[in-house]
Length: 283
Image 1 (cartoon, rainbow, N blue to C red):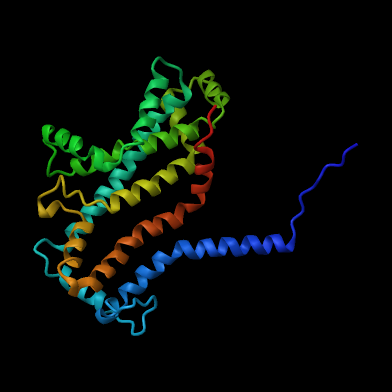
Image 2 (image 1 turned 90 degrees about the horizontal axis):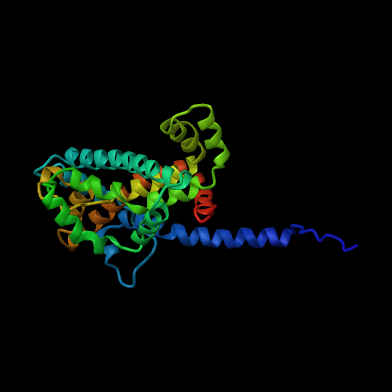
């Protein structure tokens, strides 16, 4: 009888795994470290040639100058912050709700055209925002939504990536749970909210990361012309790109914009790997 071969972990294998993962982790975090160090460099070190990675004379002048410039804006800086917070939180919530509600019947019910609809969603993943920019503008203009919050909210709510992820993950939920709930007399919305959504929590938390990052960094200058409706990235970009003398201010602004998405990711990052593992599984 052939003996079953066992895979034993060795000290050398564990050490090599640790080294490889450490190198990959350091490579991935390098851009974040560089952005932070760049924001503490004085102007003469930013334009130093050859470029230097580390800063020799760290300074907070870039941040002081950034806050001084924000206080002299025509529109209060708090207005830009509130616009970004409102659009990001409201848009992320709506995107998760609509994507999950649309994915539920595609994953758990049989009806004519279900496969065709999913193929259209998959096809929509191929189009970049640059391709759909002109059609989106025409639709928004005809609906009278130019220069309103809806122009910033509606396109991200309908992004196909969220629907695709939610549908693929819902396929992993056993149909027996849905059948048992139907036998007990539960309505469809109750099944969706009480059974499906808790079961696919890693999926919609991952969707929160993607949606939050996309909306927080969204400028929406193609749809918004009123200065009081513009987003925080638009205001910081105008401040940081007003000349080479504000290169340090631009670096400080980039770090400030980096903080909220990074915090959101650290809170829910443990669910990302599980979602990516299940997103390609089909029943």
